[in-house]
Image (cartoon, rainbow, N blue to C red):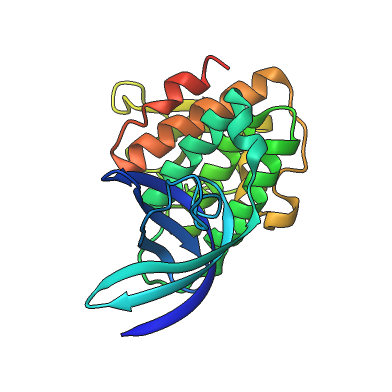
Length: 247
């Protein structure tokens, strides 16, 4: 039996029984933590606000026989605006699902924790939350070890490509000279502006990640690339993406 104190974001909540809630918490110390919040759905529960989706809270956890229960929780930031604005709610819910699929349990790595914090702020503050989602999920994939290969042609090895075709099966860029339509079915052309934006996302610090502006045409390129790359890597179709495209 042991107690521990962690600060984390609630990425997911599942209602259990009449009043309980099973939540998954993104932490810097332990990655993703699954914990039971008994009675947390009752109106007078001291755990009610701190265990709601997207909340940032300080938790006192009780670990016993491989199970974790929340003994106490103090709300730090509720992120209410994420739940009050439908467009931004859909964006945050989709991104939470992506992070949930990428973050490992009991893995000490604060990069995803920090990225989520900056992404939440950007979803709330940026005029285009849909673009924020696609930028954040590409960065999350890169942080998790799934960086698209944009530096050299995957066929000839030539670097410093100004533009080219991205081969989703090879997870990398192919220069115009080596592009073979008959042999490469799952591809997307990336303009020089889109490629520059993608390189910014992969190379930027999280503090500067969302500090850029794009034309509508380049935004569309980045969104399409992000969606198709996520599907290719995770081998999963994220259903909320179809809602995001209509925002």
